[in-house]
Image 1 (cartoon, rainbow, N blue to C red):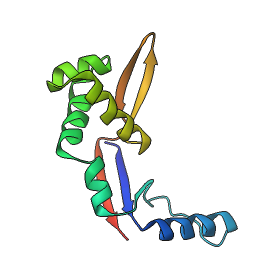
Image 2: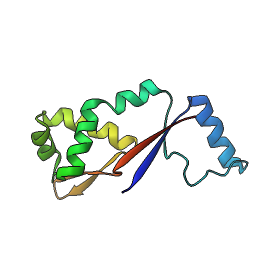
Image 3: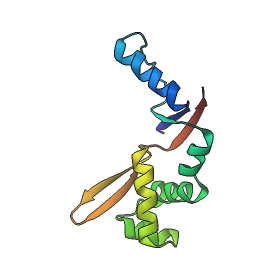
Image 4: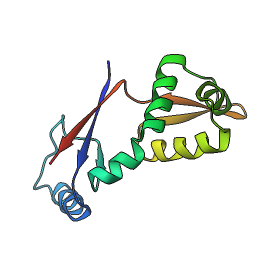
Length: 116
């Protein structure tokens, strides 16, 4: 089972961390979060019940396309597509081009949240 760790730090804290890493004064630990949100509220918007339901369908049913996912979720394809773009921006899904369609794939089986 692949886990993805999410961290919550303010934008200023994320910027400072990035500068320290770039300067070589901070070495990220292997178990550090790979995805950062500026607040719990921002994380909640991306990790909404609807988006978590989409992730569950992707993991369990492995739909062949965004339209197949929309049908399985009982949602309109444009709405599902917008949700997938947000999830992809944060690395929670990837959209793999298969001919003229995009196949959604979950990048992890579980998500762990770290409050810094």
